[in-house]
Image 1 (spheres, helix red, strand yellow):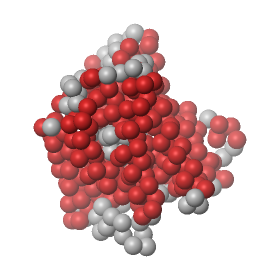
Image 2: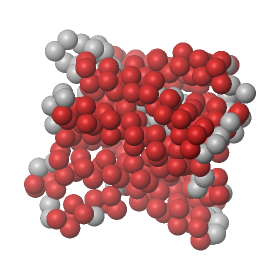
Image 3: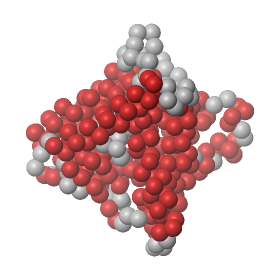
Length: 311
């Protein structure tokens, strides 16, 4: 349990620092947007290149990849169907909500929990690959088509090639290519990539904290409360349950392996979703509120998982 407390302490401190920066106005009025773009275009791509180029891919292409994909797609589709046909939401807001309900915080909370609770950081690598290389490109392609006007979208070919131009996807592809080739990147290249990649997590958390300045979660007339509740319930309760079913009866996992898969699925909504929402100017409040609610919710949920099925 100390690992869970440590992981959440790091998050709360950095989010709190972002909130203080926003309240004091030290970084200016556009700080949140600028930091979000920095994370999206520079830091996260560097993180992907470094992570994939320096890790053994045998731990990436494993059952964890399949379980994470099946659980995320299942929950995301359920949210999308309800949001689109019951709540009547527009496609961009539906996509952001689907991500909020199924895109887990794999780095800034996932890594501390993997290290201190699961005692094995390799469980995060397949999840990171799936979310950045598969899940994000699909969502971003839909957002490019539905959230941007015709001038911003450009030609049909430009739309088709959207995932290949996304900086995060490009970073992942480059890192994967380096790893598959067996080439060892020189330190002169790895060091700056490592420095920029390490900045991705704290900057994303600072961006989250900045977004909380002057706003209130579930604010009447501003927050899409039903959407936030739906996304939070699916993320906090349904996704761990789905992962348990898939891991236990689909892949025969038991003991520590089963525990790890369920804990990974119980991680809260990633701040990346807020970065994407800010980038496309759609569903920002939904992404922000869901990330905050699921972060608080995940504390008792992960504790309950550890008590119920922990090895």
